[in-house]
Length: 312
Image (cartoon, rainbow, N blue to C red; front, side, top):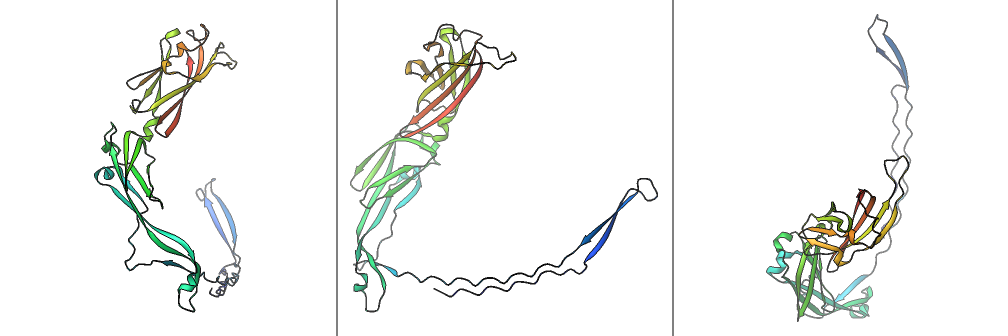
């Protein structure tokens, strides 16, 4: 390694041309009662000279070179190990991936001319694997509406192929392998941000017919699996009184399929059908309702919470 450089000489500190001075500041009108003057005194001190820098450290010895042996006359073809491409491109043409294969070995110095010095461990080229990935779009949603989404494809040393969708899309898919080619068959897909666009829609009816309404603002409920977990608390106290009302949890659990109705993009949660005492949800009761919606598609899942507090 190289020798460390010498430290630089510190610069001279600044010098004051005037060591002290006074400045008078006046307000008001001369000759009038509001006229006032104030004198401020300022002092300048010479700056300190800079310190000389330290001598730099010597560099470390370099490492031995690494040998890669290609025992053939033809030059190696370029690799394409990993690539990210827009989804529409994969439906138009397959994406070809490739990887050069190397095996570790020892005794590199014995292969070279006397006096040569390299790392004795080396890599020897043993061959190449290739594969192609294509996309078969069978989802109801048109692919152009998801044109911003992409897929990252990769090839492994054993020739295995993998495909990962970008975070802005949820996809339900299967894969089929035929020789060197793998086809990704998408049967359902939504934008990931649309999975958590639920909104509170209010309460409807009363008694056994009482329902909580949850709206799907993105309109994706036909493509997503949605489960609701609710926590319902009620109070016999009146929040308008001076003291803070005390709420009691009367139900907590995941709603069954027959307790949830989907009409277009509107969920109706049958609160009136919960196993509660008859007077629990009578009109005028003060309540707190916490809803946790779990939405999933394929291997993707997300939760969204909604809360309501008021009088039934």
